[in-house]
Image 1 (cartoon, rainbow, N blue to C red):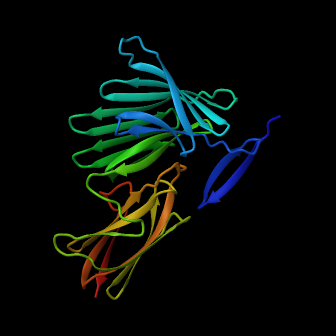
Image 2: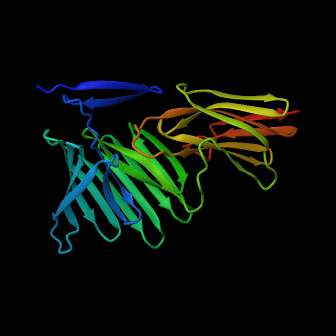
Image 3: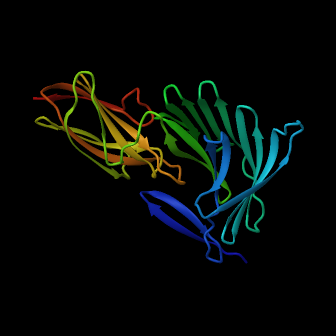
Length: 318
């Protein structure tokens, strides 16, 4: 009789489940599907570099060009295998895949929920649309505008909608996890910006003047969901705020923008590589800077909405 041991790991209030087979080998031959901008095609690879990937295909359509194919991918690591069966379709400007079945080692094939990962390429404009859908679970839309070098992302999950924008081209990933289909957000490519290290902060001067003497930014993961404190000591301003972020594996940078007597604090998501559980997490940031005498309005924004501040407070520097 096959037995399984479930190991629980707790990290910053997030629960991870790892399933271990009776032979004590952890099943790690999971698959990732994403768009490759170099080949303009969807590619399948393993979650780590040790996984070998191969595939076969046969025509499943009736057209002469065979625009519809059945692809069978085999992912192998040591003695473990994952066989991934896909419905693959490609036309001049659109590619889509649907996972038809997953088979781990000699276990029965798993039939997933209705799903589709579709890419639409706009050659003239350079724009790109990505849509990942799993029935009754989630829907992810990512629309890249090359002219603005910006990706607008809309995630619908558990009847909640999260909408935000990121600079550069952001890739959506479709991932397998012990027979379950998940989504992820991959690294981004931009022709306008180079990311600074996570412990740095961007200071963007306005046309009038810059914030003088940025003193420090301290960041840490937080289990608390609500905290907003703005204190003034002579000309020193200290902001202690809990920012929401998309996943525990992301980090936040903070842009401070001064336009006249209005100060904007804008968080920016920095995505790491690899697979991460998709659950909202929180960062606590303590931001300190100095201002000249005057009355100021401080606006703090979220990663989801950079048009309307979550918090607006007036302060007086004497």
